[in-house]
Image 1 (cartoon, rainbow, N blue to C red):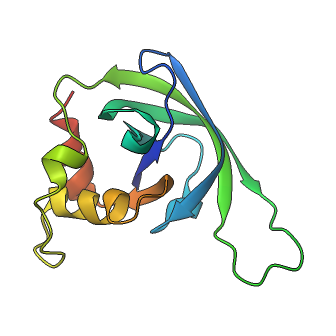
Image 2 (cartoon, rainbow, N blue to C red):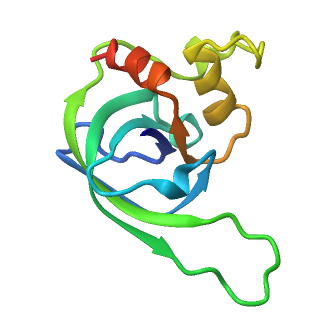
Length: 136
């Protein structure tokens, strides 16, 4: 399974991305070493959308806090960048894809990454991963 992460990316040219205590949604908590991750620099943090693709080199689940009934699972992970995006793909390009049941890769990304403003790590389908590969 492949994943997409939308988070603050301070240096989109970095060879390694490190993300601490990232919220997981849509199967994101299943991420493991060796998985492919597409990195989106969060527009909420001044980013521009898709910046790179990489391989997970380490992942660690964050323990839940006591006394809080509903908590989204979180993970910290490191990703070794394997490619830089050659074409733009972000909120501006995906905002019009709102027919959540159309089965299109762009719609899946819009739903999982941009329907809510929060940064997150999400599992994506093989079709969406193949679509994203076309941006490298």
